[in-house]
Image (cartoon, rainbow, N blue to C red; front, side, top):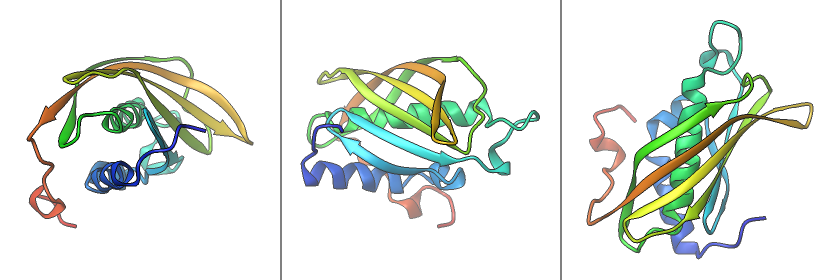
Length: 156
């Protein structure tokens, strides 16, 4: 279990997650949040499959990026938002399960740059198979507020 988060930080991270229409689009949830860690779950459904019936690698990348990014947000300086600078991901096995779980964690916190990792697991019959491994650099941006959902140019 990840270390507990202060309620105001957890609320800020969950509010940010709720602004991500992309996460709504793929039916993602953020059920686990701790200091320096975050977990995103996505059910396997036909709308996110590639031609072989596996979850598309782009979706795997999305949830790895977001899980690690939200892990970074839990340690970012107060008032800062976060933005991915780069990531490198290895796809290790097909994303073939009933559920995908992306577990992000902070490797090195910093005032401006935060280094993170994420592992993505495909879960079938309660058994987890590691399908992707990612390393990422996040930039903490002071004074850059997130846009409210109505200003993102999307309905909702």
